Image (cartoon, rainbow, N blue to C red):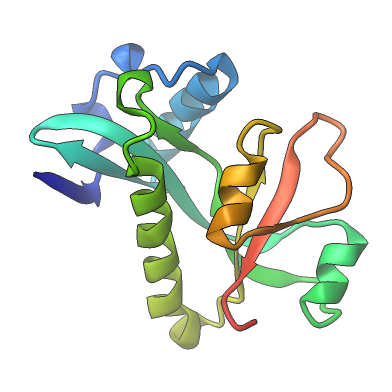
Amino acid sequence: MTEIRIITPQSESWGDFQCGDPRIDRKLLTEAEQAKKNLVRLHGLYEGDRLQAVISLEASVLQAPTEVIAKLGGRERVSTLHIEVLSVRASAQRRGYGWRLLEHALGQAKTTSINIGLRTVSLEATGESLAFYEKFGFRGARRPWPDGSWPMWFDLHG
């Protein structure tokens, strides 16, 4: 049986959580440190008591290329629920865990969007994960950021 719940960062052994992409593994460690400071929330998908996948959620302001802002009504600042990391344990990939965590994040965003004016869910995809997020309904910029990541967003009201 699987369950999604908020993670207490101190309760997990992050060293043994490997998704197979060292960039994402490093980002996850950074997010765990931010969660300890209550700057982000980590939500984990557990199978039994084993953590299989993690997503970080943070309220933020969308920083995006001009064409993204134009598609969101021309506003310069857009409130967003930002996903810094979505990571699935290497041994648990391709079982739908990432999809379930994205559904969870969008559910959280939609529930609070009316109350706090949340407009989008945003993230930065790797070249390898771009198609996954597009299938889910995220739209991306025409060009990647200088670091090679692709800014993407999901319009909660579009």
